[in-house]
Structure formats: C-alpha cells, structure tokens
Image (cartoon, rainbow, N blue to C red):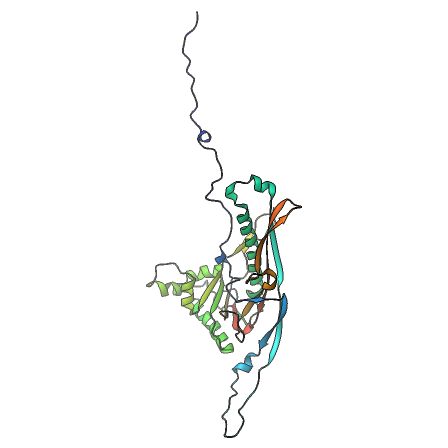
Length: 324
C-alpha cells in the first residue's frame, strides 16, 4: 500500500546575497587626498619663473634707499647725490620627481570606478605637494633665518596672554626696520585652533557674525591682509611600519612678514620660490606626464617640479616661535 502522506518542502527566505551582488559603488571611493588649501607653499611668497636651473639675482642695500641725503641746493651749485650698493645671491632649482605605474593587466581587469589615470595623477600630485610643503617649512618656518626670533613671555594658551599686542610688536619691528608694513601671517594649525578660542578675538566678532572664527576674521583682528594656516599632514613611517602621522612642521609658531604681491624689479619681499620653467614648461615649475613603459608593460604617470625657495630679505620676517 502506498503511503500518500504529503511532504512540504520549505524554502529558506532569500538572503541579501540572493537579492544583490556586492560590487564597488560607482559614485564614491575613499582616498586620503588633502585639499590644495591645506598647503601654503604656493600662496605665502611669490613664484618667480626662471629659464635656467641656477643663476644669480641682485640684492639692493636697504639702508642706501632709506637714508636722508637730499640737501638744500644753492643757486649755481650741484645737487647732493649718492648711489646704492648692489650684491648678488644665487638660486638652484632642484628637481623632485615621483611616479605611479598602471600595468596593463590591472587596467584590463579594473572596475570603471577606480579611474586609474585620475587616481594615479592625484596620488602623484599629492606626493609632490607634500614634498614642496616640507621644503617650504624647513626653509621659512624655523628659527635662525629671519631678522627676529621671539617667544612671547606669556604663551597664547594663557588667559592673560595678548596675541594682538605680540603681533603688533612684530609689525612695528618690520615697519621700523624696512619701511614696509607686514601683509602676511602664516601660522601652525594648533596656533590657529588656540586663537579661535581666544576671548579677545571672539569678543571682537560676537555682535557682527555668528560664524566660527576663520582666517579672514583673524586677519581683520590682527590688522593684516592675509592669514594662512598650515594644515597639511603626512605619514612619516615607512611602508609596513607602525603609522606615525604628524603635521608637516614641528614648531607651534607664527611667521609675520611682508610678501610682495608678485615678483618684480625693485620690490622687496621676505621670500621667493624660484620655479625652473625652462625645464618643466609650467609657469609654476610643475609638470605631470604620461609615459608608455613598454618594458614594464605599463603606463607611467610621472610628476616633477623644479623649485628653489629662498629667504630674500630677512628683515621683512619676524618669527614668533613656540607661542603655545
């Protein structure tokens, strides 16, 4: 006799994998590319395009231009006169370069979302921007290069400190020494963060703005045209070692200086960046190129810049060292 009992076959509910196969999203990716505004090396001092990798430039004697030598002229006599001394200094643009290879197998197998050429270009550019920023801070954001180094007697982290007065001394020192009023401040991010909480600065804007204190407000408070904040960070550990992230500089300091709006004859400036355009072709001394590397079976995205950074007039800089 046949057993005709019914058997019910129960199917499992659909799993997420049955309904959707995971693939990379095409509208987002995560890469640690710092914004260009985090870097100050191309914004603090003028960039001077130069045709040769190294050369000389003229320096005028400051005192010769500021000395009172005009005298009353009697009839039928010669006028008073003098001259100015000239000296020279030199620059030498060193070439920094970096590349990222995109091998043919990777390109053939890659998902569209990766945008290999774009990501490689951004990767290379980021490396060179970090290199330039590290060179800038090592040249300009240190003690011993400007006419005055000073640490405030009361650090700016103290409630009794007076950053406005300290900066005013710096401005007056430069003006009295050179005849030029400083127009630029460069500060470490930690200093900027401290100043945003300063009672005097906050009090100045409490009735005029509900926004948090930014660089433009800071410039108005200190009576200076431009405030730049060093925000860039970098990884100092070698690949495979324990991560060690830090800012691109080590000092919690502020540079007050006069920076010429543009490179020009007979115009003083605290510093210049010389860019060897005769090599790179770019007005800022940079170039990014794509090269076919047949031996490696890859396309190479290569970037390079040819720069030299020079303190041109140390009297136009005042370095407030370790203010917090």
